Length: 498
Image (cartoon, rainbow, N blue to C red; front, top):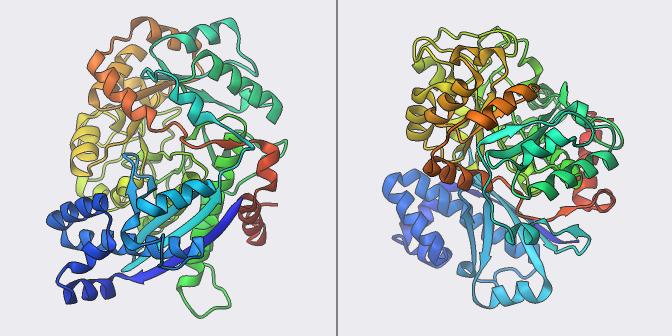
């Protein structure tokens, strides 16, 4: 049940002036102890980013005080609420002193969104009372030892056969990816995911579910979501307002609604994760990307992807940006060919890779492209130490999960056998490798892939962060939930869904 909603928007320049006027004492008044440590570290590295952090936390506290209906008075004080980021980039709240007791007594929790865009700090807070009508997934998972392996594989049909069960129970398996052939209806899907979870509680159950032409579950109540290009078109749509930002704000709200509907419906059926959003730029060259892309402009792609990711996060689902560093320029389809992008490193970093850079800590996972960029490396990005380690990990500072794209695709054939491809991908920096539509190759991997213990431990820690940390509503409870109803109503109003 929703208790209250609060929003606050703050001009960062004004907060900078207040910070200067108080000679820095404003931060001591506003930030909690853990927030203060992060603020000081960011301020030392980059003054502008430090001030942006202070501004977003200021806005979060204001929004929270509005949501609980108390204003800035006891038990609500500036320093009693802290908004910190998990390693995946997800913002979470913690409470100190009397506010902690206040929230616990009422069984309340807060979902917080913070962002800084165009010199504005924006915070949105929803305070809810924890529902008893939920699947207590987190409590169940906490009782288990989580040791997912580096292989994500698929299953044959609508229910598990003996070979599926054998593969899922193998210690090198860390995920199961579902396809359209695995979906008949909600009841069957929920039964299938429950059976997988019973065999291996620590595997990540995933799906390719973006909207548009890439949506595996389309019937029996699932919302048929729009292609992401529709959101990009909404961004530039003329409207009755004279304010140029209105269409952008509407597109971002629609993207958040898409993310929320997508994630809540999947989670209600036991699916943990979807490989979305597509961050490729739409140069009008790639048929396989096409309308899966938000836009040609990297700034619009960033803003809409961040908004969609926020919808996923509100539903307890992590995100995966793809296909790094960009598949929008290469014309060939990596499912059936080996695409090549002849552009320079500078060109790619200044355009295609910008959404990855700007999403920063809010990006939980990345999937590299099976595209060769010969001016940088002779290997496709998914097998390239230059792209995955030097650029993604070191230059961009990415600390989340790196998934290889499907090793059975033609774009992966340059690596040789499936085992060699997996070894090369893991060595380059991938935490998990996908093998789809080829049970025989999955068996080869499970039998022959050698992974060091140190690599397995490092990757397992990252993979565990993608597991949902909040309960999922049942399907019936979801239909009655106010946030879900609001999200669908907005998408209907904008004629993005029927």
